[in-house]
Image (cartoon, rainbow, N blue to C red; front, side, top):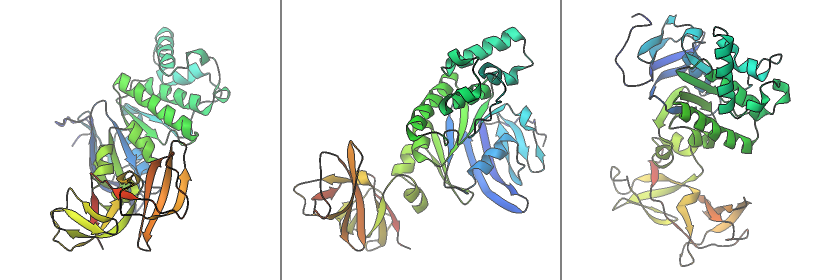
Length: 356
């Protein structure tokens, strides 16, 4: 099959049963996902899960051992054959910005446009700098800019050749938390304005959820779930996704009738328990937002930890040695360590897994 052979497809990017790695060490195993035009996808997972390896394969920096990668219906990677990175029309934004220190901001952005006339290049650079709100810094040099500004320059440079796809390799990890949040939303707005698809690699789930339309949760080189952020949080495919995404912890329970679970927090109504027979031992995921303060409740667990966060306070409660859970309350509900607080479970999406 020729690398430029056209294959019918409805997706901008298709990764089909991809395996790859380094030498004899396979890092990524049988990974498949697809991304639509204008969508932002994410490879999310802990360090060493294979997300950056997949990104390198998409960029053409790493060959694949199984499967194929298609971009705009054209095959760009097969085992033993790979379209060179410079011919893929894929832009890259790196963690360390990778700007040229001896070039001005304008020259950095226009570096990939050397084949254009000076007038066309100048106009394109001007448009991109305005898009990333750096039009007044065109003649500055990278060392004169903040980290957030340098990352905007790196994005503008990646956008300059009008790529089909942008790859973002942990682009905000060198920035402080507040700037990361603001810049990730700015980058999303820019990509959506231009209608450019992107793949973000990150270990920060808040960043992934805020910025991306589809998220792949990876573990040990395999995709555990590729889904919208809402479903990853409320309908996780397995125990790893349930524990990795969001806050919360598991408590023991036993399935009862009418799609409910008996636990030390009382009887909890479920929404997807009918496949288990009554009396099955399960572990139930209780997230902080599943717990509400209820002065009339008979359930009064003890406060064992509290973390004040301004508008809210995260409490950790203990019912017994086997049952602890967290709850997030508005900060004006101020309870003390050792205090017994009346609460109840209000879990619209009940997440439980059979106990191993």
